[in-house]
Image 1 (cartoon, rainbow, N blue to C red):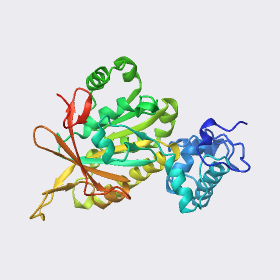
Image 2: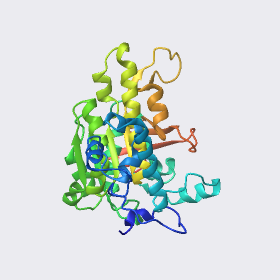
Image 3: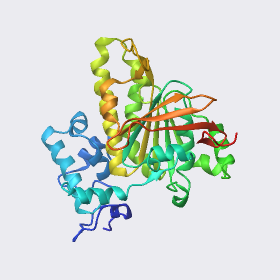
Image 4: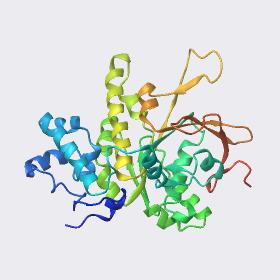
Length: 341
């Protein structure tokens, strides 16, 4: 059995075990009955299993001890195949691995510079701000730019747009592609849209994402917005705990998918009023600490002067938080604030 080409992502190993990362056939003690249970929670391959938590397997009717063993076995197989790095690495090895991460240009040099090259793979980037600040516009632009060749800032790959607020507009994708000199029809074919109607539907779509990423050769996933249905479905403080638990599980599944599948994930978030803010910005991101800790990078967007928008790094493991980028929404998507209209 040949090792999948995708399994070459990790560093060189002295001896690589031949593993089919797109199936569950190499797992010990897994029969058809177990495969059916795994499929009920969106697990069809070693990649899906490595991105899942044992709790999800328990919910599918698998014994807790066996669930932990299966998740661990999947990661061990992916490491032995060379697809994942070893569990223990030196800081220098981590630095070298991070140099191989890929980024997607936003089409706007000031935004790209703020993000140190664009939207990063193997991470979840959160765009947060009031309505009309450009969150959805950036998402539409990224659906186009991810399809560009690598030498132009793309990944030559497709996009998956999970739409929870009916904000996706194919006409906008068409306009951006045409303005950038691309074939609009071909670009639209590279964007797969999933309209989501409630929080349970969103959780189901996220569970099945692995298969869709493979099928459509996608390297970019957007959820616009991540919080909308959770806020609508869980009203009142008595439901807050359950809401946050489900939101947390969804975010962690997205993060594990980003890491295992080497894709870039962007989620948009709404803001709520902060009655305790006497000075500064009277709004704060929705979702509380769960969203704050569940995303890798948090970018705050606001309206600027002269019909511009301003982006600021709100939280990041390594980006400086005192820098801002000004941009403008144009027919090309998003461009530098000083670009010609």
